[in-house]
Structures are given as C-alpha cells and as structure tokens.
Length: 259
Figure 1: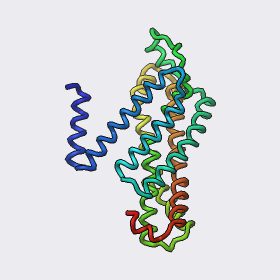
Figure 2: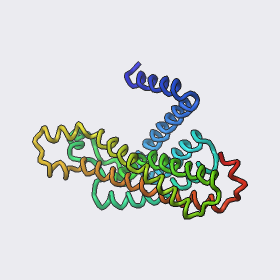
Figure 3: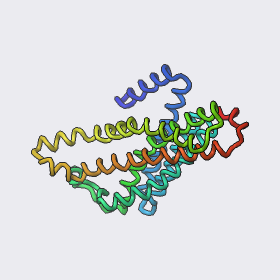
C-alpha cells in the first residue's frame, strides 16, 4: 500500500468510528467530489471545451451532493442550494473579470522553470482555468456557509413563527457575520499554507519583499484568497434573504414538517 492509501484508510476508519453512518456518508461524498473534479479536469484538456461551463456544472454537482446527500432533501437544503447557485453564477463573472484584470492566469516564472522541457501550445485558455481553480476552491466554503445560515433561521422561525421578514433577515445576517471570521481564516490558512515552502525558498534565495509581493505565484494566491473571501461574504445576505422570503411566504402549517 502507498502512503496515500494508508492515510485514506486511516481517515476512513476515523470517520467511521467517530461519525458512524454520517461519517461513512461524508467519506462517500468526499470520494464523489474527487471523482467529479478528476472528470472535470480531464474534460478541460479538450481545446473545444469551456472550463467555466465545466466548472459551473461541477459546482452544481458538488453542491447538490454535499447538501442533499448529507443533510437530506428538505426546505433548508433546497434554499441553501439555490443561494449557492445564485452566488456561484455571480462569482464566476466577478472572478473572470479580476483574473483578466490582474493577469494571474497561466504559469508563473518559478513553475515555467520546472516545466521548460514541455510544450505549452495545447490550446487551453488559462485565464478560464485559473477562474475554474478559484471557483472549485471556494465552492465548499460557500456551500458550508449557506447551510450554516439557513438551518438556524428555520429553527428560529419554527419556534417563533410571528417574526417578520426583516427580523428573520437580520437574524440570518447576525449568524452569517459570526461565521465569517472563521470561514475567512480557514480559506486564508488553507491557501497560504500550501505555498509556505515556496515563500521560504524566495527569502532563502535573497528575494526582496517587493519581489515576493510582485511574484506571479504569490499574486495568484492573494487574488484567490480575496475572491474566495468575497464568495463567502456574498453568500450570507443571499441565503439570509432567500430563507426569510421563503419562510414568510409559505404556510405556517408546513413548518411542522420541515425538521
């Protein structure tokens, strides 16, 4: 067995023992996500394929599996799914614009040095590829944030169905704002941690701080962190509004079935 197989087996055992059936389901969902990403990457190698459309389809599948397979199909997960899709459609346009504006698409100088023996003429639009990378890096956090906002709002309304739409929206925003700091920190350390060794290499080779800050590989990470943070931020008001709207327009008798 390879080291990766051993680590995967250990993760499987821990999720099974600690999480029980829910843990096994979560592990299965993770395998589905890996399969979706691998298939999406393979399709993107076709010069005639659009990476952004493939990414949108992959995001829909990943969000659907995450929300409905783990949390079940109910009004909370449906609202969170719709909010996620609305946010991702907006994000794709915003991210594509900023990627083109900042010119972070393609390989950095450090990456080109290692790939110098290979041909780069394979007909892939790297501006769209880096857009896809940022979207797929963000989808998990956005989906998490959506269900984390929608779920307590449904519980609040179930216990106090006399709340107005404005009060519900305000409650959802307060919940989302409390989650923002944690989500932003998670994204920051996840992205930055993967490039920590490269930063050490930069300074070890005598790079000045200005050179590090202007290095393409560093700017790519900063742009990814900032745009991912925007996604986590945007999902909060979208989910809060959709949930408040749906709760205040549905029949109160339906709340007893929405558990």
